Length: 245
Image 1: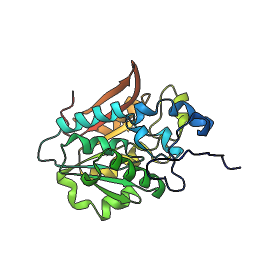
Image 2: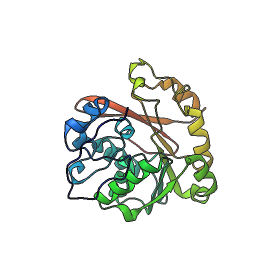
Image 3: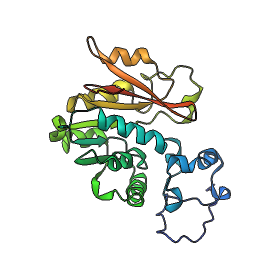
């Protein structure tokens, strides 16, 4: 049975099918209501007409965290690296933060779900950064290999991959080698064929031993916890020549 969604008249563009701008808790499916209460932390401009699919509420990076990661990436990489690629753009939280930083000559964003991509493009317009972003629809591994391969030496890849749904919270230590639908090695190795500078946004309980193993001998990976209101939201693992503090 489908969920009933009543909508008020909006003064802004109406979302396409599968994308929503909820204005009242009564409209919101029960399993995302707690995220809806945090909507202004997720997107500070939510009331300006942010679009989300129901699934993207679970995975979008809160704006303060996205902004801090954007700052770390901007400050922690040599100036000649002028391009950033967001491999799993989702509803656009990180992509928008990268574009707003003003650091990058171009932001490339990849998303395989056309409805989610429509949300991300619209949300970039809400923030006024749509002209700084090039969008790609499809599988990120194929697009990196076939369409963006020439960007390698000039680029850094950021990836906030799916973690397998909210069930990851029940794991005291999150196994990155069984993460679904992509394991740590499934993600990292193809990205490192394009550039050695890769930043992965992962669950806060991720197994650090597994990150150490994939880092390799005589290499260093910096891991930073990103917190809000005194609680860790996630970690970011920085592989390559990052100077991140």
